[in-house]
Amino acid sequence: MRSEALTFSNAKGEQLAATLDMPLGKPTATALFAHCFTCGRNNLAARRVAEQLTINGIAVLRFDFTGLGGSEGDFANTHFSSNVADLLAAADHLRKTHGAPAILIGHSLGGCAVLAAAHQIPEARAVVTIAAPAGPGHVVGLFKDKLDDIRAQGQVDVQLAGRPFTIKREFLDDVADAKLNECLATLHKALLVFHSPTDDLVGIDNASHIFQAAKHPKSFVSLAGADHLLSRKSDAVYVANVIAAWAGRYLEQPEVMTEEEVDVGLVLVRETHGGKFQQEILTGPHRLLADEPEKLGGLNSGPGPYDYLLAGLGACTSMTIRLYADFKKIPLDNVSVRLSHGKIHAKDCETCDTKVTTVDHIERIVSLEGALDDEQRKRLMEIADKCPVHKTLESKIEIVTTERRV
Image 1: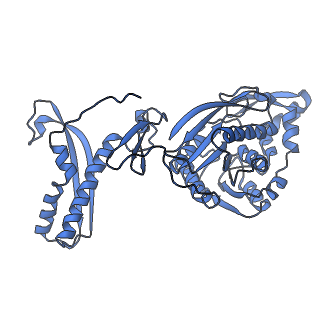
Image 2: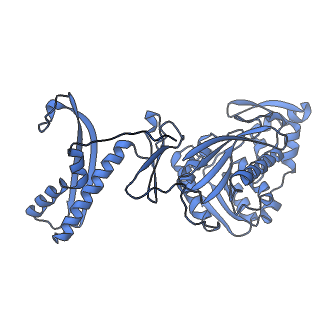
């Protein structure tokens, strides 16, 4: 995933902060993501869903609504209608720069916003709601004990998610006037509704209302065990994977193209600028990610460099054993290789002739399944040491590094 920070203007000329997450290679589609009430484009659900969508080849624009995160404007002067207007401004920016969004995704109140905005984004073919209320008026329940004060005083500061926000009378009037039933009845786009039966902030009955009010094509997916904010990474990843699979049915599939062709046998590795370590790896038609675990400051979005090294050795070992077994008609049913890498003291290495204090140590455990006799097993284990990658790692390797100026 490559992430680009950008800004665009809303209807009032205020600059809204956004992030465009791009997949490796040419996107198959672009999605516009609307975050939950008082959240932002960098909340966990938005980031994780976007990241997984890019792995599935879908670009994602996520942005901060007016007055939130890095966006200009005063949150106190916003309301549901202004959120919808911000969404339309985001769609227009995409339309002018990368192509209009084909998928609209809204989380919580953002789900209501994409439903209200969908008919004004004709290029959108699919709409997705995640834990969305049946109407924007649902959010007033978050500060229902302040409603009388807001109406009497015109505006009141309320605590939402541990932060103070100013809510004005205009906000209450706006959400009260917003009706989604007509939007749902005339959506004329494919609809996918995600909701958890254990959502204790927006009840599952809201999803039932949305689903019943919409016309086909429509689909519903229950997020059993998930919370309202999709705090668990596996839930966000699951949502993104389902969106990618489902949306493909309704989108025009472009010809597969790549941004840069890399000949087979050559490998291109370059930064994505997503996170501290993330790299994209291109070879032939293949697109991969390399990263480091979160505990080391990475995003854990792909294997690490040594993981790829072990994978190369393991794959080569398994392939070599299989080729030999098939050639010699040895009844090998299955072969698997488990590997690990570490450092050991040179004095503990019986076969090492070195003056350094530590050496690299790879532990390789080969499992052979089948009706094999002892002689066949012995021979296959000997063959394991003859795989080309094994020989390369044990030989003297010359690495020549030059600079390519661009």
